[in-house]
Image (cartoon, rainbow, N blue to C red; front, side):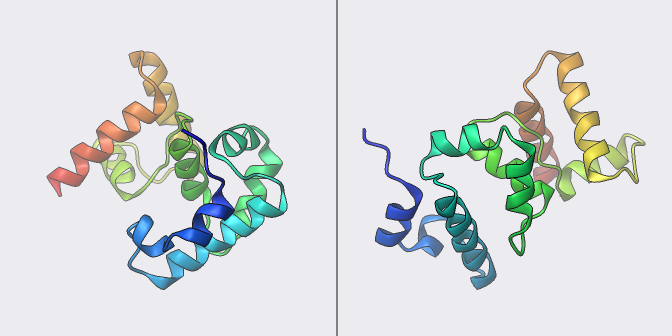
Length: 137
């Protein structure tokens, strides 16, 4: 199967339908991210996977309106990186365990350390916690 680049794909598909986005702001953010990536010659999943290795590239993504650290980590997961994208479910789980009021980076690091101690991939632990909390709520 030939990998189709981001720019070509959004030119031929309705982004809101393809990504199941209901909010126009999310569609605008996705287009802005794509524009940033195209401007930096990042056009495929593999390009993005490698590009995210650099902290300055991750910071560039954060300049897009609506993109925070969770979004950057989530994008990494979408391209095959095993990362922890801390959201409301992961924060709630940590608070239930007595770990509250940590900054995003601190809580992500705590989940990464827990995954390492348990012998799991960070993204796998994140997904398990997310599923548990999303079904409990």
